[in-house]
Image 1 (cartoon, rainbow, N blue to C red):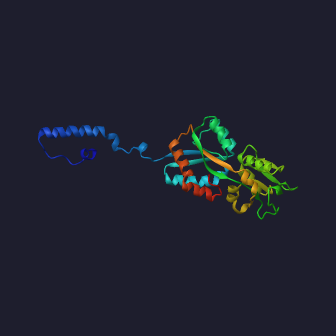
Image 2 (image 1 turned 135 degrees about the horizontal axis):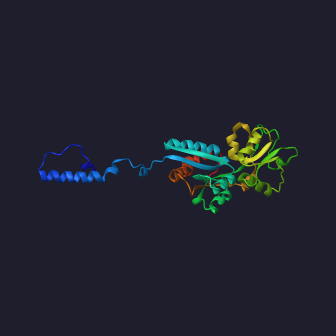
Image 3 (image 1 turned 60 degrees about the vertical axis):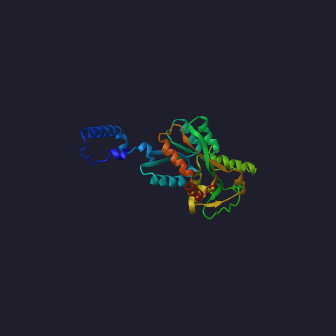
Length: 271
């Protein structure tokens, strides 16, 4: 009906009564269809604006790739990331830092946010990650096991136990009944890895995904005890998200087959 009354050609000169009726109908229809004549962006499904994502440091490379992909698929959007230790990010969120999405490296750190009722809905596990040992290129220390990290004179770095990678490393050490005194505890996994990359340490216990991301800057050593300390990574929409629709779409991309392909390629395990 709308298409009929919107015809631009003028009607033939009919009888006065019929013309008057048609004009009245046209006027009524036009006044009631002004809003529908303009594009309704709220119902178009188009996304726009900034999406702020707080994510575990180990997700930096893969999430950066997914963020660029998201912006390309949704022109007019911008994804801004804050990467760091999951515990620090969780504390920032509960302290009122503005964010739309939180991706943590463990359920324990996500629980900080859910317990504070700062998440909208239940978090979903989107990947898992396993530990590995990062050594200097060429592995000059001949490290082949977790036990080798206890060798005298070897400078080893661990993540702080409050950080998911540190908690996982300690769990693997406890299961192996090994005691290890690192030269430093770092606040996130990237900081631990950097110590090896800068040759300030001989080895660090990090994630497989971080060894993968470092390329030839380090050598990677797998150890069987890591199977007992695998971390699940949950992701959640935050309650006070300023751009909830775009945030939901970003989470959907992360969990999609396309997103999982990027994450698997970065060394993460499927959930």
